[in-house]
Structure formats: C-alpha cells, structure tokens
Image 1 (cartoon, rainbow, N blue to C red):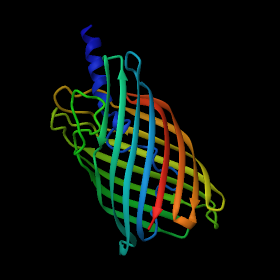
Image 2: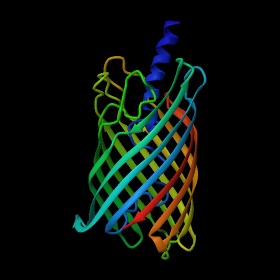
Image 3: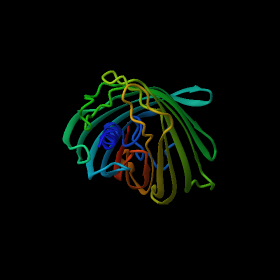
Amino acid sequence: MKMRGKLCLAFAAAAVSVTSFAAGHYVPGVEGIQAASVPPPGIYYLGYLVNYNINEISGAPGDNTGTVSVLANRGVWISSHKFLGADYGMEAIAPIQANSLTLNGIGYSGTSRGLGDIYLGPVVLGWHGSNWDGVFALGEWLDNGSYSATNPSSVGLGYKSTMLTLGGTFYPDVKKEWSASVLARFEKNGTQSQTGITPGNGLSVEWGIAKQIGGGKQLGLVGYYQDQTSNNSGPGASPLNPRKSAIGIQFDYPILDHGLFLKFAGYTEYSASGGAVKGNLLRMTIVKAF
C-alpha cells in the first residue's frame, strides 16, 4: 500500500503540469504548417483557441480524465530592422485558461479558470531565402498565473521558464506550393517557489507537410513530439519523465479582403509514457495582420 501511495503521489505531481500537456509551459500542436516561417514586417494578432481532452495519464492507476480549454492571445511585432540578415521582432502571449480534471487514482476532482502564465519574447529573428525560411527566438515564461501545489488543475505552473526557439521551413518547388517545416522549442525550467521542486527541462518539436490547394488555402499533415529531457529535482520531486507523440491534419483558410487567416487542426496522441497526459487536441487559430 505504501508503494502504491507513493506512485499515486508521483502521478499527481506529474498531473500538475497538465496545463502544458506534458513538460513545461509550451503547448505543442499550436503551430503546425509553416511553423518556422516568420511573417513580413508588421503587427499581428494571433488567437489560439485550443481544446484538449485528456483520456488518461500514462501508467497512472484509476480512471483519470479532464478537459483543458485555452485562448492564447499572442501579439507579434516584426520590424524592418535587420540583425544578422534577419528581420527583428518581439512577441508576447497571454493565455486565458479553463482546466477541469477528474483524477480518480488520487481521489481528486476540480476546476480552475483564469489568466495563465504570460510569455514575453524580446527576441524574434526571421530569415527568408529563395526556397526556405528560418527562425530563432528567445523569451521568458513568467509565473504570474494562479498556482497551488495541492491543486492539479491550477492555471499557473508556479515557476518561470526560459524558452529557446529554432526552426526552418523548406519549399521544394519553385511555386512554393509544397512546404515542410520543423520547429523546436527548448524550455529551461526554474524552481517552484511553493514546493522547492525544479521540473526537468522540456523539448517540444512540431512538424508539418502541406500543399497549397488554391486561393491561398492549404491542407497538410502535422504532428508533434514533447519530451522532458532531464530529471526533476528537489524535495519530493516526481521521478517521472513524461514524453508523448501526436499526429494530425491541418487546414488553412485565408480571408484576404480582411487580412485574416483561419487555421484549423486536430491531433490525436498515439504514444505517451512517463506519466504524460494523453488525449486529443483541437485547435483553431485566427491570424489578423494590421
């Protein structure tokens, strides 16, 4: 019974990171097609509406389910200034979340809503070649969101993270009707002030292969992989290292007269281990150019 109790607590600790779906703050699956392509100079609003249905926590005892709904509001400014041959820009993300969890393995059921942890990115670099795009970005996730060590549904994670982004998009044909992209984000996580635990660092990799199908519309195959690349540390830290993989489909629909782009995607997670939550993700993105 003691061993089973320790395992339940370990899975409960892993479930506290459910707002990020695996390891760290970043939500995989929000980019997809041409994920590494930075837009031309201008000001942009991107609204990511994400619904994530949790079917299970890998390896955890009992029936563990939940829903995470997020509206991530992202502002991006790309300037006409060049640095290392790239367009220089800045960005910020403010997520509004609603988390509902039922973790029968530990006898928990609860709901939390509110403003999640904010991201500030003072460095965005976008390169554009004849048949390729590249991106580098650096920023910080704050710990402003409401967090409680005893509430797995908290909208905040209780720690800061430094996030490094690197990726590229390749266009194999002259007309750029086909595209293939890979975007990697690495998070170095800080220490939770309430628990003294430092979560292991996280790596998220998103990819997309797409084809233009007329009128600026695109259809493609997308996917992601997320992995906690180092161990948790600190008093009572979970020994689990979550990782997961997903595959899905994305459809992009432009409304050029209004400077709008609508992007729809659905993912199913086909592999999860180390206490990672596993489920299905639906995402709609609204992009507005000013």
